[in-house]
Length: 430
Ligand code: RM4
Ligand code: MN
Ligand code: MN
Image (cartoon, rainbow, N blue to C red):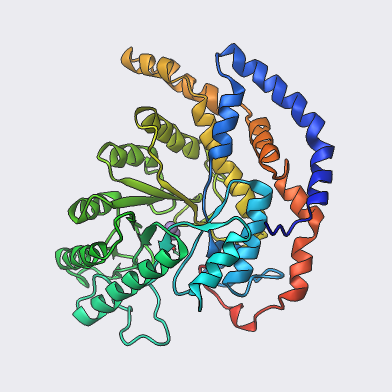
């Protein structure tokens, strides 16, 4: 396998930290043992955890106002995969990459697949894009895509999605994620019922062309770029559409796509109860769809979401929704942010495994709110860092991915071979 970070450096870095890790790990093992938890069982589950990296996440993001490009930004999908391989090598939690078409459209899909495979990477859900116009397209998406009033525009958007599925099949993907920016900026601009009907017809047509072993994931978003109404605004609309469309059509929850203070963990539970929770886009936010790093603002919410997921898996061990990081890195090195964020999501997952579910259930039955919340906090307040570090070490990654990455000088090295692209200095969310 091709590895871009020198294995000797990685080992050298790990050796420096290994004895402290063993001490911390053994101390945590003893503490958990007192609660009847075997640390090795938790460790094995931590090692199984993975979250996909979005190809577009390895470039520096931006806001509506400006973009401040970083050094050595990847200029094409191959260079993006190079960066993704570094994230996986050090974090050992991100073996899959999610592509955005047309941003990542390869000339030769076979070549791209082989390029990913030499790094031990594979492709997660494919993302279509009908929220931007492409130079060579006939119709404009200015007033919508899958929901447009004009049939020709809808057909163009449908054809694009079907094309993305065909490409995804060549790359070994198993899912299509559909997010549309369709909506309106003024009251009265759009007929709510008609636009939703068009949406349903369009996604049913796409669904009909889906291979049998594929899922279709519908992503809702409360606002932006439409600022008055969005056709798939909330989990209710997403659920209705998924239910109308078919068994393998599911809802996807992007954490940033809700109004502030919405109880996302409850949405998770509702969708799962009715068999429609298909995946997540992880990120964090303070105000809106801020696309900040996972766990950087509200790590307790992330834990509560995983608490629901672990509860669901207790009934259905085979349940495994699609996980992806969907963040925009404006002021950090994207590789560092993605490694750190993957570990934050993994941390929330690991903590959720430590909840005493039997005790919690009894407190709920007994209407004991104090002890019910305390049983969640007991798990949340534990420092599980030694488990994460040990999982990485045993899988061949770095005990401390960010410090190892900095020591490697990878960014400075690629900066030399990737001169800045003068066309990529403008504004833009991603
Ligand atoms: C959207 C949404 C989609 C992502 C685009 C780039 O807000 O989160 O998942 O593909 O941004
Ligand atoms: Mn998203
Ligand atoms: Mn978003």
